[in-house]
Amino acid sequence: MTNAVAMVKSNFQNPLTNQGIKSIRDLQQHLQEIFEESEHQSSVIVKLYKMLFPDWENIQRIEGFPSVGKALDEYIFNLFIEFDREHHPECFNGGSWLNQGFSSNEHLEPWEISLENCKIIYS
Image (cartoon, rainbow, N blue to C red; front, side, top):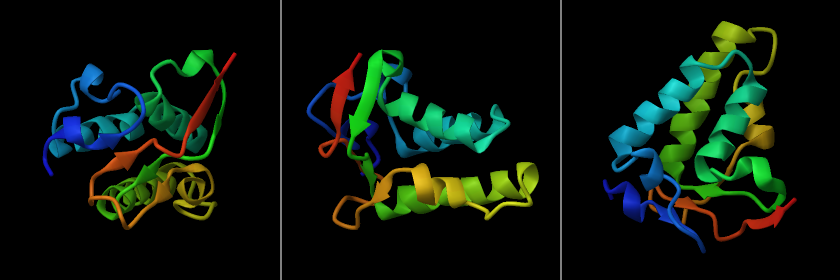
């Protein structure tokens, strides 16, 4: 599965295609940019959620978590580990992803994202 259009399972429009993310390579590049332009783990987490929920500013809360396939989960986790080694060497590397990130789902395709378990409550 290399087409990002088919990468997101959701009950609403694919948020990635509106950001020009049309392939796994595009997604990898976008994720790397998020980490490169961030100073703190909390900023990264928010930007990852904004990537999937472009109307983030209008959301009061999200019940449930986005789910990702194993390859995508490992890719983001490794980016967090490297980020923490550089910016937060005193903390558990990758801990923010484990605590606040998306859930991993081995039933999804390796780079697939599912928003099916997310209920959005708007402000």
